[in-house]
Each structure stands twice: as C-alpha cells, then as structure tokens.
Amino acid sequence: MNPGLLVLATMFLGAEAKPAEPINIGSRRELFVDDFLIERRDGVELRLQRPVPREIVMVHDCPWEGSGCCYYVAMRDGDLFRMWYLGYDLTNEDGTRMAGRPGCACYAESKDGIHWTRPDLGLISYNNSTHNNIVWTSPTADNFFVLKDGNPACRKDEQYKALASGPGGLWAYCSTDGLRWSPLKDSPVITKGAFDSLNLAFWDPLRGHYWCYLRDFHSGLRDIRVSTSPDFLTWTEPELVRYVDSPDEQLYTNQVTPYYRAPHLFLGFPTRYIERGWSPAFLSLPDPEHRRRRMDISPRYGTAITDGLFMSSRDGRTFHRWGEAFIRPGIERKHNWLYGDGYQSWGLIETPAEDPLAPPELSIFVTENSWKTPSRLRRYTLRIDGFVSLAAPLRGGEVVTRPILFDGKTLTLNFSTSAAGNIRVELEEPDGKPIPGFTMEECLEIFGDRLDRVVAWKSGSDLGKLAGKPVRLRFAMSDADLYAIQFR
Image 1: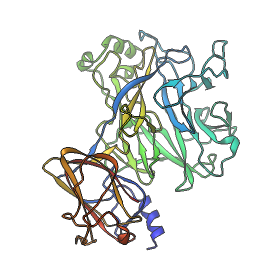
Image 2 (image 1 turned 90 degrees about the vertical axis):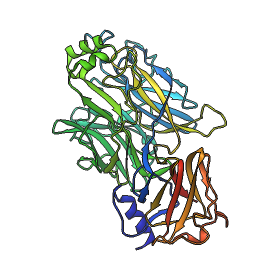
Image 3 (image 1 turned 30 degrees about the vertical axis):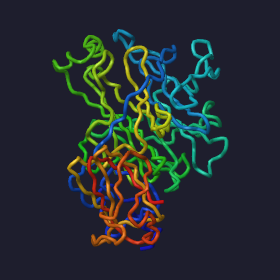
Image 4 (image 1 turned 120 degrees about the vertical axis):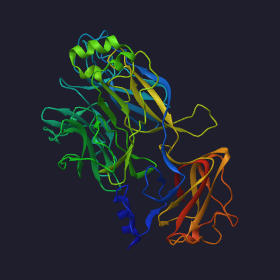
C-alpha cells in the first residue's frame, strides 16, 4: 500500500480497529488514550488521569450574569486568551422560583490564561446601560459557541463564527473581531436536533471540512450527534455518535475538540447527566432544603446530578469513552453535588505552571455553585498530553505495539517515573525479533519526569536507518506512566 494512503487509512480507523498492515504514524505525536497502537499489555493498564482544581477565576456577580452561567469557550488568539460564555440565571437565591430574564453571550479576556477580566465593551444595552461585557443576546438565548475559523478559504470579515440555537434550529453567525455579530444566513443551518446545550463546530484541516457536534435525544436520553459541512452553511443530516464499549448514558454537553498537539485525535469532555430518583441519601448531600425547593419547580432539578467525562476518537464518529469520571463533583461543600457540576469549558490552553521552572500545563475551566447566586468558574490544570497514561506498578510490566512505520531519527517520550521506577524501550522486527543495537539490554535506563525525553541505546539515539520500515516498540516499565510518544 502507498505510504500516503496508509496514513489516511489508519487515521480514519476506529480506536478498536486492528489493521493488518503497519500503522504509519509518520512523525505525528501519539497519545495513549486508547489501545489503537497496542497489541499486547502485560501488567500495564490504561489509566485515566484527573485534572487538579486550582483557583476561582470568575465570580459571576454582574446583574446580567447569575446562577446559571455556563458553556464557556476558551482559546488563545494571538497574544491574548479569549473566552465567551452564557450569562444566565436559574433559580433565585433561595430556590423558590426560576429566573425570568433571557440569557446573553458574554466575553472575558486574559494575558496569561489564569487571570481574567470582563471588559466594559459598550456594545449591547442591559437595563438601559451598555456598561457590560455582553456581545450577543436573543429572547430565546440558550447557548452560543464561538470559533476562529481555520479554513484557508474563509473570508477575512468572517474569521470568527458562532453557532446558537434559535427558531427552527441552529443558526450561524459571523464576526470580524469576535465581539460584533451578524447572521451568516437568514434561516437555521441545521434543523434536526434539540440543540439545548452547547453546540460546537470547528474546521478540520486534515479532512478538509467542518465538524459540528450537537445535542439531541434518542429513546428519551440526551445524546450527542455529529454533522459535517464543506462551507459552514450546508450540513449533513446529524448522526448519532457511536462508542466502542460504553453504556447508553445521558450526555449533556460534549466539548469535542481536535487536540492541538495531535490534531488527528479528537478529544471530548462530555457532561454525564444522571437522574437518580429521590432517596434518603439526598438528605446527606449539601443543602437538602434548597434541593427540596428546586424539586417543587421540577423534580429533576433536585434529583439530577452531573459530572465530567473524557473520551477520544480517531475518526470523529466513534469514541472511546471512559466510564470513570474525569472531573468528580468533589468534596462536599454547601453548593455542589447538583445538576450543573462538572460542565467543562471547550478548548485546551497552555498556561504557566505555578513553579516558574516547570513546563507549562493545560488549563480547562469548570462551572460550580449553579442554581445559587453567584455561580463561579474554577480553573483546573493537567499535564500536557496527560489525559491517559500507560501505567505500570513497581513490580513492572510490558507493552508491545502493533507494527508501525515512522519518520524521523529519534524517539521521544512524555513520561513520569518514581525515584525507583524506570522505562526501557526495544525496537523489534514485525515478528518480534529484537533489532541489534536497539534491544532492551542496550537501552539506557530512563527515569525522571519530562515531556520530551529522547530515548538512547548504547549505540546512540539515531533511528534514521529504520525510518519507513515496519517495526514494533516494546516498553518495559516499572512504577512509571507513559503518556505519549513521537518520532522526530
């Protein structure tokens, strides 16, 4: 098979596919978020990692915000970090009634991705004043998603696009600056769906089209659908997202995004929605009286709880979804363990670590304190590439990949070990025979904690003579985590 066709073929295979021919990974970064590259694991597990909660970055105490702010979109845009979100109210503070005012799309910005401000934009009037950070509003405002269009054919005056639910379906908008918006079309661009949470879209340069991930229902269950478009205006009929081996759970938001360091991989951060039904156990959760008052409005406002999940895909349609929570509701406080916990932002941004000598981290943002005024936004951090690891205990374990083809001269690892742990790497022929000069015994022991350590053997680190030839990688690991590999 032509090597170029191999790249495309393997890129579009689902996470559980087992191609008969070598997988051509070229020089792209591969994350161990699934078993796609793995033929055999012995004593090593795929372990979901969890983000670390950090500081509160915003308290939504402005009159146009409220107890239900949500659906955050964060991105780096040049030298600035930018964020859009829905300003929204749920109940009043004591939970006796629902707020009556419509939502609005709001804007914030930051120089470092950690400290955020809400600029006084002066664009849209609220209570007879334009001193606010509102960029869009509608009598039926329920969600608003913003993307910066990476399509090379995109017009300059439409480089920012947005999707929002409206009469008859999902509407498209455009902007020159991400602040002033106008409709792209005088009718909805997608009409089949429920659309009652964040509906998102992005340009895919590898496949040459837009993706849209939207909200719908099947059999009474909240679900995720996917549609594609060549021009952002004409979309295919949405189809149900598939899962490799996951129960049919209710999923609220989806937050699917191509991973910026490995754009052939799509990562999703859906919210799991569970109506547990009333039981005495709810009386042990925080603030049961407020919960009872919400239930007088609608039973599910008290009995539904949510948390954040993680999933990944190699074809955009079939996802490997972890059943364990990526973000749990957390230690019980007065205002958590409720419907609205774990809503994660769309977008992964690199931010400085607390230690100035440490490498950058990934930041995501998560809502908390919903239903009560004011709601808050908390930052969480995660190791770069650190969503899932191949994890080995101290007693050790091994991982063998399927045959691969690579480009480059060196192999780098994103890994972490304990002081007693280590990793060694062997290159083998497709039949499992060790390649002289690159055997396990000749590999220099690897220990430490780094995003890009070069693997070396007694003969050195140059693998150039093996580039383009089918090989297997064999990892021997002890008290170690391996997150990603890349040939360079």
